[in-house]
Length: 194
Image (cartoon, rainbow, N blue to C red; front, side, top):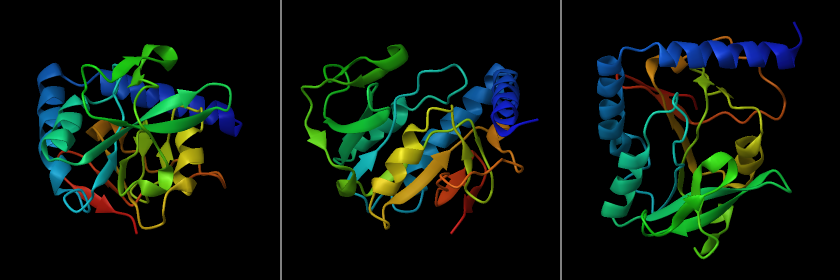
């Protein structure tokens, strides 16, 4: 099986596993992830935090995290997809009701009226993905947006993932452009990868 086909198969399998979670179990995991968020290394110290808006049934709900960042008085940054360059542009969001609009694939994104932010100003980033290994490698959705964004961040910017238990996958295919995260946490444990 070639690498592209293998990644497609793995994506389907992980999505199936996530969607097969019992509703009460999933709710318990998501609540615990929201509680663990501020305990992750670097979150409390960070001034500028890059999160993402969850949009797919297999993603855990990130809205509680967005609310927490704003309540803590930190600068909340969210990505917006630039379809022409297939990259992410970053914007500061201060009001989740007024600053977001439907964007790429109908996902809520910052309005172009929000202040644009350069990647090197980010202190801490929550990295999305479908699957993660204990070595910090991830399997994304295949567009490569975060593989392009992560190298533009300052080396000392913390990169973490919060995941549901079915998202652990040890044998992930790794390519030269893949960017590992600093740590991965589910609702029970955290694994620091470097």
